Amino acid sequence: MSSVSSASCERKEMGSTMRGFSDRSKEGAVARATYLKIFVGGCFMTVVLIFAVFSIFWGALWKIPAHNLPGWVVDFDGGLIGQSVVQALSAQPGASKVTWTVVPASQFPGGAHEVGAAVLEEHTWVAIVINPDSSSRLTASLTAPNATYNGADAITVFAVEGRNENAFRSLIRPSVQGIMDGISQATAIQVAQRASSLPTLISILTTSPQTIVSPVSYRFDNLAPFDMPIATAVTFVGLIYQLILSFFIVMIGTSAREAAGFGKTLPTRSLIILRLASCFGAYFVISLFYCLLSLAFQLDLTRKFGHGGFMIFWMLNYVNMLAVGLALEALLTLLTQKFIPFFMLTWIITNLSGLSTTSLAQRALYYSEREIEASDLAASYAALILADEGIEITADKIVALTNAANVELEPIWATLLEKALAGKNVKELLLNVGAGGGAPAAGSAAPAAGAAAAEAPKEEEKKEEEKEESDDDMGFGLFD
Image (cartoon, rainbow, N blue to C red; front, side, top):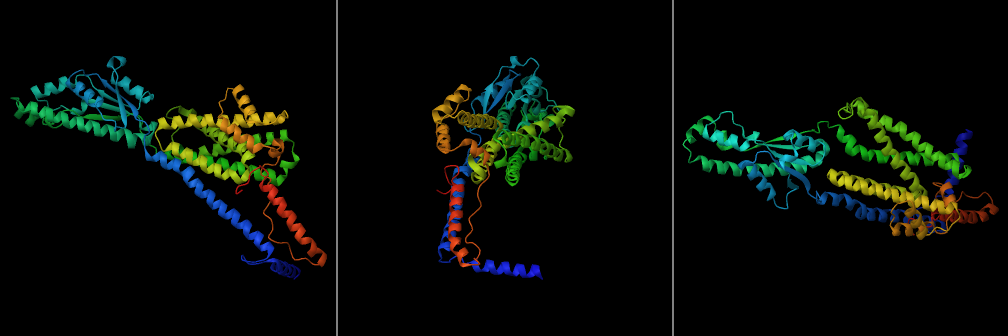
């Protein structure tokens, strides 16, 4: 009975302070303005992100590829077929997705197999090989009809689907098939015109009609098929999941430190060690179970590195998650919990855009991202060094320190960092990561006496001021 009566009393007290959204009191107006400021401002920021960030992904799919893929043409024949194919590929229009380069056959003493090995080792994306004696075999079959003649023995196309299945399926194979089908049709017309005047025409049509219908064709040799659909979860979607998982761990660690009060009780050195140790330890275990999930669905990791494939796969995922986690930990110090989700959305979209293009573009984007991350970390470390030495943090000094470390940093980023940290205690910011104040109460509980009623507005005003200070603890607010 006592618990029921106490709950009833609490509800009565709360009811005395509850008011409608359109309440015209001063407290209601403040609460309404706060709500609209945050909600409308958040919607506006979302619209900005749609045009500023999503357009990266849309643009990545707009023109694929941005640059043609390189391809080789190797003529081991040296006869009419070889010359015709080389001439046709050299005259391809600019709309082709592959830029063909004629490579002398003398560079491959091992023959077509050596060309295939070069493609497998990623020296080029695709290679068209005109096999030896292709022209002489066709001439012989026209002179003395051969029932075993096969026009596909003339040309071999080497490509590697496993290098990038999207580039192979949407760019390389369609481009090659379109070009080679055109060459085959043109050659068939020429051979038919030539054979029409041959005395062996009837014998050819009876014994070896394929010599006339398809005198020159090709075989598509996919040296490394992408024949494990489960690998898509690892090489594409799984990379996005790693970003999200890393974000979860960073936010869990931040909440744990805030709940334990370590942000206020631990010295700077101990706090940094705790954050680093938490990252290294957590991602080591989580990446292991992430890899075990792939292993449970029979992802074959032994093709390239044998039985050590799983360990290499595990360490690669560990390093990936660790790199993302450490970057987020560093940015959390500067951006705080309010801004880090917007950064995560930007990061996911930019990574997704890179994965949607060919591997050549992926590599360019990867190196670009590595340079950006290195410059960001260098700028942060430079600011910490200046703060630790008690030196004023300016853009010129940040650039000077990064240059001394052989890291290139654009002056604009140094200027932005200087403005963000202007008048702020960097060490104090590091200690207070994630220690933001809660939202102010719309009103206090109903006072039990007149004296308490007189103090309520002062108490509420004090909480409002604390909230404003918390919002501006980094020198800029989300909706200023």
